[in-house]
Each structure stands twice: as C-alpha cells, then as structure tokens.
Length: 375
Image (cartoon, rainbow, N blue to C red; front, side, top):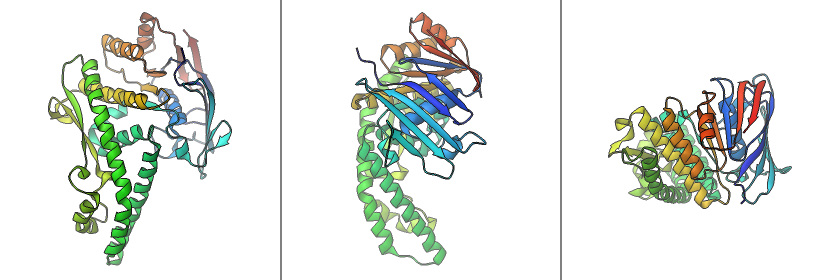
C-alpha cells in the first residue's frame, strides 16, 4: 500500500526563532510538545510554508526572518502519492524577491508552487478570526480553492490588481477634484470576467463543502446541534457590472470600490442563528474544526495528492475524552500526515499509545534543545 503525500524531512534556517534545525518526520503522526513560546507553532508554520509558499500567520515574508539575520531558508523533502521524491527549497532575503525551487529548478512564478503539495492548518487564531472578520472567511475560501484550481489563483491575482488600480484612481480623482467615468468603466469592464469566474468557483466550492461540513460537525459534536454555512455574494442577485454601476456615486464619495467579489462572505450558522450569537466557546471550536476538516476532505477528493494536516494547539481546554474522540476520527478516517502541537507533554501521546499508533515525538525545550523520540 502506497503512503500518502508526506514531508520526510524539514530543514529550517533563520526561520522565526529557529537558527538552524533539521527534522526527520514520521509519514503519519508527528507530535510536537513544549511550553508556549518555544517554537512549536513556528515549526508547523514552516511545514505549511513549504507546502504553500507563504506563512499561515503573516503576509509579509520578511517578518519570518530570524531577528538579526538577513535571510531565511526552508527545505522540505516531499514524498508524493506516487512515491516520487521532491526537494522544495524556499529562500527569502531582505529587500529581495522570494525564490522557490523544485529539485534544483527555480520556479519562474511563485504561483507555480501553489497547489502542488496541499495542506490544511487548524489554529486557535481561526476560531476568533473566522467569527469576526469577513476577510478571514474569504481567505478560507481562497486558500481552499487555489490548492486544486490553478486558474482560480490567476483570476484572483488579476482581479485584485485591477481592484487596486480602480481604488487608486478613485483616490486620485478625489484629490484632483475631477472624475473620469470612462476610465473607471474601462477598468470595471476588465474586472468583470475574473469576478464572474471567481464567483462561480466559490459557489461551486461552498456547494461541495456544505453537506460534508454538516455531516462532519454532526460527527464531532455527537449530533448535539445543527450547523451549516452559506455563501453570501452580491453576484447572486445582480450582474457584476450592474452592481458597480449602482455603486459608482458611493464609490466616488468613499474613494474605494464598495461592491464586488472582494466583499463576498460566508454566513456561519448554528441551529438557525448566526454562530457568533448562538455558540459557546466549545461549540465555536467544534464548528471551526469541522469546517477545516471539511476543507481537507474537499481538497482530498479532487487532488492527486493527499493533503497534509497541521493541528496547532487545538486541544487546549478540551477534556481527555473529547481529545481521544477527535484523534480517533483523524486516524480512522485517513487524514494523511498529521502534525499535532500541544503544551501538554503526555495528553496526545497517551491517546496515541492507547490507539496503538506509531509516531515521532519532538520535545522542544528551546530551538536549541529539541529531542526526538520514535515510537
């Protein structure tokens, strides 16, 4: 039986608080334990970065360079579903463009790397972020789709570039106290095609994930509540160009584009109420975990490689039975290679031993003091 996509080895140089370290990884379960602040999350983020080409936690690459250093380097040895070995190297130098190479050959565009090694991260920041910010909910949609639809990323980059141009013009018109409607309409027309394609891709993804999510949430919550998600977009009700035409005067006053797919959102619903209104902290965690595991399943269903799953300190304040229940699901339903970080040295390990699962355990005292135990 073939082993699903996994990272066999991961090398970090000047990445966040790491000076230099090489990790020999287990193809199935990697447990990373230690106190807060020692670098557990940064290790998971390095794995995510190697897969996606950017950090999960920051949009600016330079913030990932170790303090006092001028560059960072990540190297991941990947074994894909066809048991082919690939070496991914990512380099970031201060004030220079990031470079990513595959088996020694540099990508011409960073976007060529995106989607080759699918990956899903679940982190404590997701709970409040998905609850509070429409930008984070859109990011969830985008992070999902770009991993299996290469054209989606191209359309998204094109739309965002045109959106920036349109907003810049609106600000310039306000400063100069003039307005060129023809020029604004020209840019709007160029935005229409990528907007329509992005809308269709998001709508298709939400249609796909909806049933999966409801079932997964029911499973995790042991059928205690009903939960669902809905896709909210202006384009459900009106053509893109008509929407922009309706908001032209408002855009002119506010100096920004107020309608379009950059305003799309997800409605998170539990028992027919908005999640934010209804849910307890435990229910929020279950909702977000179900959403992310459903994201994983959808990517898995359409991708040639099995996604890697990263669980960053998600078991805090959950009782032992709940943690065992979730880990049992992850192992029985084949979620591919797992990275699990935890502040409790033995909580997850005890469960893995009860479930008779092989794993690697990394005990991090500091980035200079890391021990590996193979089980």
